[in-house]
Length: 55
Image (cartoon, rainbow, N blue to C red; front, side, top):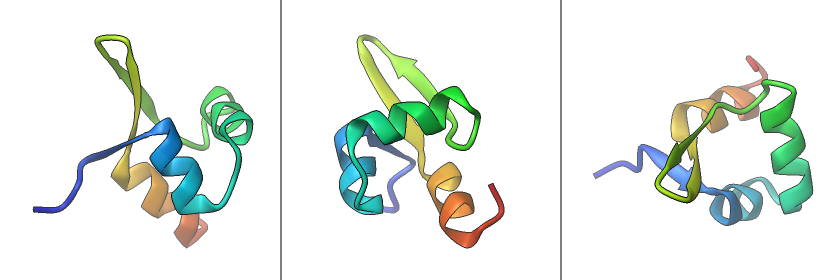
């Protein structure tokens, strides 16, 4: 089954960036995040759009 969302750490590892950069991309709207309990998760589709240059 394909993942629907990634943690901040997983996203940082996937994009070869630091956590601070991931939070900055969330703040400026380049990555779409949501809270699930205390966790912040990044939608997998948002990561794909960013890598494809669409976001």
